[in-house]
Amino acid sequence: MALYAIGDLHLSLSSGKPMDVFGGGWEDYVEKIKVGFSELQNDDVCVLCGDLSWGMSFGESLEDIKFISALPGRKIILKGNHDYWWDTATKMRSYFSDNAIENIEILHNNCYFYKNTAICGTRGWQFDSAEEPEHNAKITAREAARLRASLEAAGEAQEKLCFLHYPPRFADSVSAAIVDVMAEYGVKRCWYGHLHGSAHHAAAQGTIDAVEYNLISADYLGFKPQLVME
Image 1 (cartoon, helix red, strand yellow):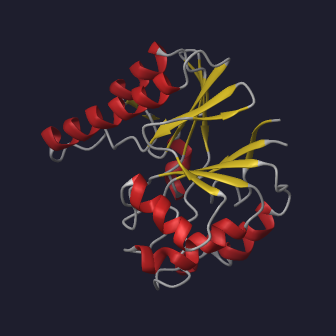
Image 2 (spheres, rainbow, N blue to C red; image 1 turned 90 degrees about the horizontal axis):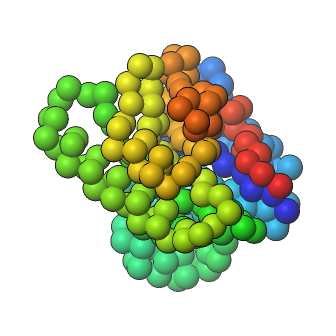
């Protein structure tokens, strides 16, 4: 039994936006995902950090979600900026139930536990854009509140792990609202996705201000989930 994480699968099995068109590491990426997950066992847990499906609705995303469900292990998912199919947690759970999807759970204003460790997180938000500063500040504050709710739900867990879609740090910039909440709750390890291509080089990696950061975009990992802990 082990805990893994990966982000940005960007599946498009029925919505006509396959990532293969970008070439490079994205060629045959669906098969690469299958191979990457093949090392997991059914009692393993994998956190999927957003941008799961290009589908614009439940119907368009169904084949992608079924694909994810069929991969080994229990999956805990959070929202990415391209998950337009995402809806309320209640509607999503009903959607999963109606389609016999039993091994996918939703991380949203809550937390899950792996042994004595809490799995916490939220989407996060972009913080390095000069466009619409008031709008971005409002959404960042909301995401910080959601992260706080998730960490609060962890109670007195032995360790609180943080999983995000957007990076809380990038190059010389930092999302203070998100980083401050992590510090308040004693988070020491954080995983995030969203970054692709040349952006990988500016990703925050390693320990910064006592927090270990890990980029887990699927193309960065070679489509193989990263081991978090056993």
